[in-house]
Image 1 (cartoon, one colour):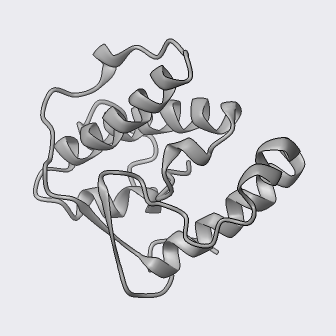
Image 2: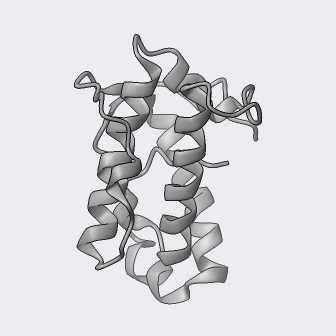
Length: 142
């Protein structure tokens, strides 16, 4: 499971579909609807929120919007109804780590997308996240 801190627009088609499916799974876990993945480290940032289900729903809204922008047909009715308005915090170090990780994946999986974004110096974060100073997040498994 990878719930990217990066803006979903950087993902290739395969990555965006995986993000949608994995975040729906995260939503199910945070709402107590499944027994699997309950201790997955990627969920820690959402669990730290006052309302984890609302935080992950807000995250999903932006993934869905990117899918619609590309003409994909993701079912928005699967997104929880509560939405958190306060941004979730992510560190600059985490964003940079994920950027390098994504570029390595795209170099193999989608060389054209890789070429189109590889020179970007400061990638944007997912819209529901706010970037603060700091290293790689403690929940990241390197």
